[in-house]
Image (cartoon, rainbow, N blue to C red; front, side, top):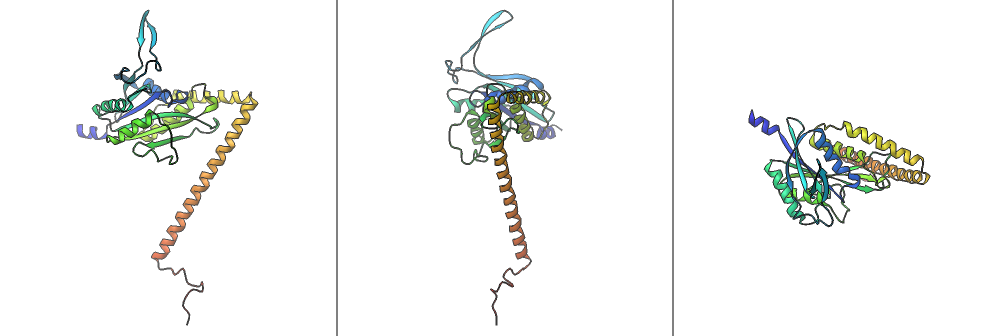
Length: 289
């Protein structure tokens, strides 16, 4: 019975980082949602001394029960039980400023200790995309970051470094990204967090609790609609983005349909060869007497 339980029980580390990879705090908000909605407890910290420039990620002064204390930047890891079959290790903290590989190896060392088999990093980036369409998400395999975008060449953040390092160390790993409308970048974006959680649910093959964040996402969309309604310049810009997005989606659909048609024609041709159909008959190319 114990062996059967171990075979079914899955431990997955899910991480999100404040900063450049966290547009509108959509990624860290998704992890906070999981922490708040499941039975979770703190299991460890990654301290700041070796990884953070304190002039960039400054410590905070807080007052707790009348006593002042300094809160240093650090990564906190939580254990959250989603079901009898699934346990999440949730890592959240500021993107480190230094020694990224050492930092990633320390997180992955903890993942190895708790026998996690999969690493998933969440991220959100600003993009020219309308809030009136479902915010797009992509999933990149840590072992091959070119899966979803074979043309990108440029800077990357700690989620990509973490998942690539995880793959090199033998973990199954993915990074999940959502695009956030840049013109709404001053506020949080629960719609982006919701989309990340939906993709995370699919990767984990489970149904995560999303009730609260779904309600927040609906309010976010209603507030965005109200903002556009009373700003003609913004309304025109959103309309342009809608046209661009719809045209791009249409082109992608047409390409997919053409690809399917080509596959179907190729399969039909190969089947005809198997049945001995002579494609040259009747075209004047046969030998005559």
